[in-house]
Image 1 (tube, rainbow, N blue to C red):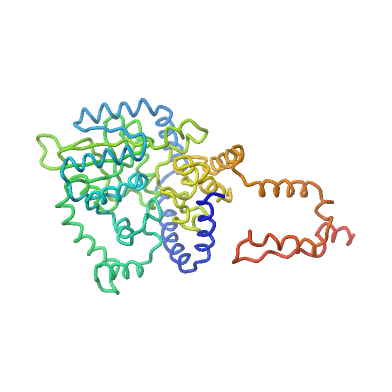
Image 2: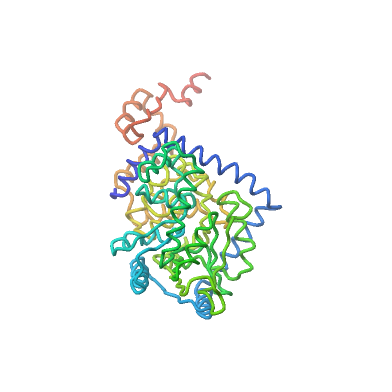
Length: 455
């Protein structure tokens, strides 16, 4: 058992029975379900919309190299610079080089999972650069010294009381501050940061090949400020975020917002095609797009390549019974939930993180809700199969499954001993069931024997 797996099991048991945590998640998830149910009613045929998005993304990743080259050519023609990064460390080095060459002391960041993936913040801070998260949820977890809990709603695990207490401790705001008052406090605090920052860093929801642009979608306007007010804008985007045409956004943006937050469309949608032109007054003087691979090419060459269709809406997390019980931090990876359990082992070490693919009931709900039509639960089964093929399953488990299979093949073998002996035998493995649960008791006679004796 890997170290990560041991931590996963321990944390899963702890979080699953944390009633306060469950209450907060249930409340916040409930808000999402209500909005989502209402949001999809805006589609005359939501399944048809999902099929269209799936087709667009499949075309994009099937012709990944061609579309990425087209994007690079067009973005450069718009005055921007493209940097290719094979690994997280390469991406970090390139960003650090840009920041240092511009003598930057302050960086403002919009919400970006790719920057979490490459862990850019601690590196910049180590070099004396202040990094400020400007998304409200990201700002909250940064102040708390935590990482995002969820790929769309970073502070989902915190109640309004938790946030009021946190701000009281860190900023001496009133302990009974309302969400509106705390939001206004953050808004005022960030305004000066936007004005003083030399560099703005963002992610990118999509890379648009035919216009050489990046598309950003958000609800707070902070991404717009992060990329337009500093003189340098750096967008760090995974290569799988490519889409063929600007016309594809018509389908993708509405489907993303509906499945991500339940909205018909998010509040701010920006298309950025490079730095400001000579006749423009506003915008960054220089713009860089860092195209991040970091394991995506390796994933592309496996049966799991369709996972690259993901548009990061978070719907699979919100509907996963495992995620809803063990929470986002238990995974110990940037990307959690069903999609994270597929891609994280391939990005960060298959042997170390193979257990994530086994944390699944195979209920298929993730596949059902996916707006990009990714067959998520079957991709999880492929990871499980590969783990066994590579011999990563435990010997004790392997032998146990052989005995289990051999016993279940014949009713006579199942009934060879009575219920009392079965209860004694299973009590030796009770620790596998968890400390918080008790094993069900076997009846003295199986139903089959009871039925036979009755007749």
